[in-house]
Amino acid sequence: MASQTRVWFITGSSKGLGRALAETVLERGETVVLTARNPQQIEDLVARFPNRTLAVQLDVTKPEEVREAVKQAIAKFGRIDVLVNNAGYGILGAIEEVSDEGVRRQFETNFFGVLEVLRTVLPYMRQQRSGHILNISSVGGFVSYAGTGIYNGTKFALEGISEALAQEVTPIGIKITIVEPGGFRTDFVTRSLVITDIQINDYEPVIGEMRKGARDILDQKLEFQESGDPKKAALAMIQAVDSENPPLRLVLGEDAIYAINAKLESVKAELDVWKEVSVNTAFDEVLVAK
Image (cartoon, rainbow, N blue to C red; front, side):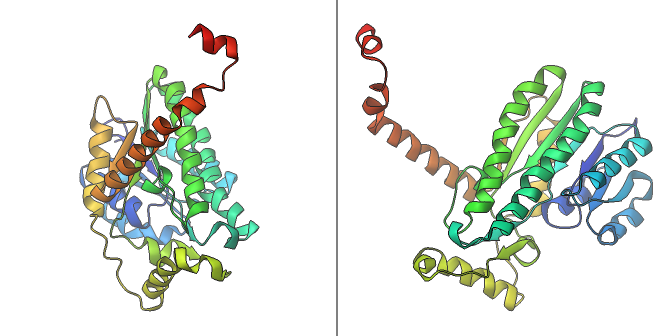
């Protein structure tokens, strides 16, 4: 079976975009290593597709579990063709409001956990001389927002290593795609968002409404009515993997495109305004030569 279909290894398969992607890939007849901190949450997928799934317990912050999960995947299917680094969560709070422990925990999951999985899978992909890695970032990995700065920091870091990694592994047949979703109708707010206990009044005019909205969703168990369809996001990611020339960045959602374009325009405008100051930092003899 492994020789007939691609083998996908998806972290965070039990919820959100990871769940939608895993289900869609399986429906297409491919093979998936389903990973979750609680494998019971993915038992239904194993029951529906028993011959093309492997459910593995995986907390990406535990290197021994990462190594064991990858070892089991290779033992069962012989290869990993597509790695999807999807596991992660968010913290809502001003930079000053997030505890040191909260900051480190956020980076351990969203950045160092991804790095651990990457560095464990890459030797097998190098041996194969093939593979595709999808690193699930966010529009917040390109554009920062007040109230989510620590989360943004983890995703900016992920995008930084992904750009370099693409240059390192493309010559040996491995492709890299950074996925930047906007708002999608998942349970991210209710299951994957931590709101800081510390609240500093000076920041309320800036992030108060965002904090209140998130708390209302949690307290009242409301649905997060975003416009993005997780199933269509999954299909878009599969299309990128199917492509002969996949994008380095796959932006998902009109809201994400708008935000990224706005930032690009802002950066370009500021570069132009300050260009003379920037250029004039060279030694005088270099400036005269020009």
